[in-house]
Length: 164
Image (cartoon, rainbow, N blue to C red; front, side, top):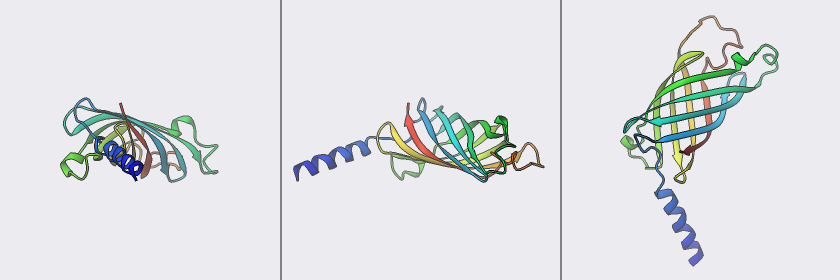
């Protein structure tokens, strides 16, 4: 029984002292999977806090697995996207949990101008999980081929987030 209480206390302490967003100077590194129509890939992003509820960052995605019909047609530039981003970190405004952050944002990338809605939950001071829903608001070209639709459609990212 004593061992169980000690373990529960340690788990509660580690959950209670993590924080999803600390404001100015806070750094978050995320790495995860990207899911979209006709392919799956790898997403990596970094966000840096410039205010109590504002962060800016960069995100990149590379589509690794493509449907058979697109494998030969997709070049490196078709599979790759790079974006700068702006987030409004509103987890503390919602006051759901100190470990939780919700961040709507805008992004400007090589393929389009878009938006995202993300959520992070930290289990410890340094580790958590994240998910992001991404959608293009304005595409740079209106008549896109299936290959050009990569990164120009609704996508979902899911993975691990780390405090830096």
